[in-house]
Amino acid sequence: MATITLEHEINPWEAQEARFDFAARKLNLDEGLWRVLRYPSREVIVHFPVGMDDGRIEVFTGYRVQHSFARGPAKGGIRYAPDVSLDEMRALASWMTWKCAVVNIPFGGAKGGVICDPKKMSMGELERLTRRYTSEMIEFLGPEKDVPAPDVNTNEQVMAWIMDTYSMHMRQTVTSVVTGKPITLGGSRGRRQATGRGVSVACDEALRHLGIQKDGCRVIIQGFGNVGANAAQIMKRKGYKVIGVAEYDGGLFNADGIDIEALIDYKDRNGSILSFHGAEAADPADLLCTECEVLIPAATENVITSRNADRIKAQIICEGANGPTTTVADEILAEKKVFIIPDILANAGGVTASYFEWVQDRQGYFWPEEMVNERLDLILSEAFRDVVRYSETHGVNNRIAAYMLAIDRVAFVIKQRGIYA
Image (cartoon, rainbow, N blue to C red; front, top):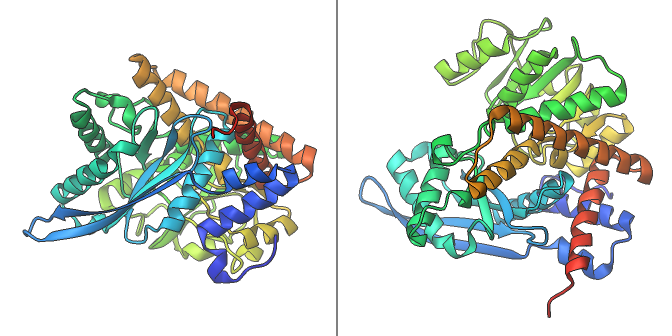
């Protein structure tokens, strides 16, 4: 892949395009199918008013990008953030298509978002924004059309509002229109921990593949939100040693291992990991480049770039976040022989558990957490082995192998279905 400027390097849509094109070329993908899969099926942009607490009316912009319906309904999160953009939604929707195909579940990809700053909004304002956004998008949503889920700055409560708004319009309760709901409204046990659990399974498989012992294996985690904290907690119980945790406002380091349970409790009480007494303060940027066996970027996109990739000292990078490594950084890490577990495999535990929730809602029968975890472990382990096998067969790195596997599965279904005209 050609070297690109930093401005283009951190554009998520261009990064996704570059990786897709490279994988499609390696597959000798039919030119027509290439064009079908390269672009989203639908992009919806809405501008809608919301009454604020002080009586003002604000107009917000929202997006929903639906990349593919070939293998089933579209699936993907909804995020609320000031920097939400159409390019970001396009990239994340495409990644969701490939992610679902890698773990072989019957969904296509979608992504949605609203440009807003939820930290400056009251619960009432967030509820009104959510319900109006849902009503604007309602003709494009549904259990057989598009099934949203939580993402950045959205949660179970937001999903409950979406489910209720959709249900009021349908004049019946439709729990399967979203996933990531509260358990009392049809949510699945194990869903909240699923992405972190999937990260831990991917790391287990990577250590087994590379012949590295789990006990004492040093881990650094960037991002201590739902994914990072759950991954840290589960991996510590398995025998990993989490020596570093980095957040946007500071980091922690303890060469003997951080007490993750105590850190989670501390953050819950204080809202931050700063000043935690069980570790030394550390610069987050330095932590990314600290020697360890496993580095888990579990926060946002473009964390590992051409500016720091050459200083990475991890043997394994397991991408708990979407798009944390740029295409240029990939090339640098390949030269350093870093084993990368790409995002569309590493963090697919969340969408796998969402699939389980959708199935349970449609069945009206809910599984115990042990069954959810057992089935998730099985799917993630099989997907890891599929990707590594593709990598070895085609002589490509794990990321391109994951893309090739996913594209191959989606293209095969499109060829079977044929082109309607």
